[in-house]
Length: 332
Image (cartoon, rainbow, N blue to C red; front, side, top):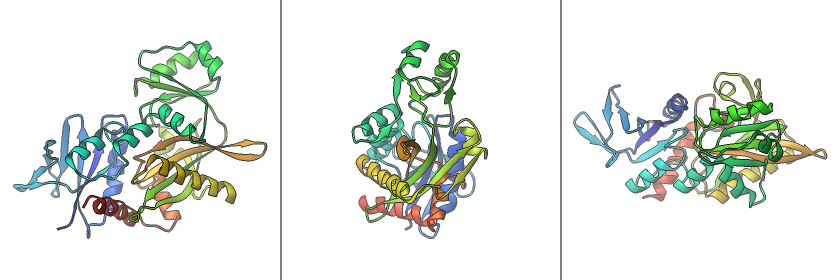
């Protein structure tokens, strides 16, 4: 019997529709000669499986199964492509751990860590990774405009700390806009991160674990946004130029890829992850600064990871097969 793969999409964040597009991309790449594929849409406690004939069935969350044609279907593997809660912050990872079902992404701990931008940055800072100055506001915690100006300065980015990077982010350039930006970010996350702006070249670098356990780093993408920063419209509505491989020196390219591999190893990464950086200058030398890590990166047809795979002469079908088979072998 072929393994049954369930693509888990949707979620409870503003990136629900983006997740469905990622699911469509993953579904198009999965090898039907090797796998039986279903998509399960998650929204709160409503979990719905799309059946082969186009109809739907309710998922029994007690054993992660559903009925098709009078037969019980229980997936062997979960490919998590939810951007935001509950797929990017460790909640689903914990559920699948309890169900003893292997899944595509990193562990519960790593998912929770990478989802919490401030905590992740402070953790990796201890390993010598360079990050921008930032402060964290917990739920209901307030800060004055003067404190932001004194500790971080302007321009700065005010963003939801526990969320994706597409919604709730403001590039704040005027003192009078600080409180409004904090409130805007809190629509997506109780905790808010205020981060100093770094001016430079923004890049993204994908990495995944091969079947032999090796961390394989993909080519780097340079991000040239037509907007103030790489926001939702830049990501998904074409208001950006993405250049793969990035226009970096050979030395900087190798240093970025080495850092990506080191971070993936430090975190005990699994599946596909994407590490985002900004390259600044110091006395003419390139300085690599971490922006954030995406443990369940976008997988639409135009997302970074497929672009980087193509630039490396790789097929997404083969990458996904390797990720699934590496996990299924480990869990046999």
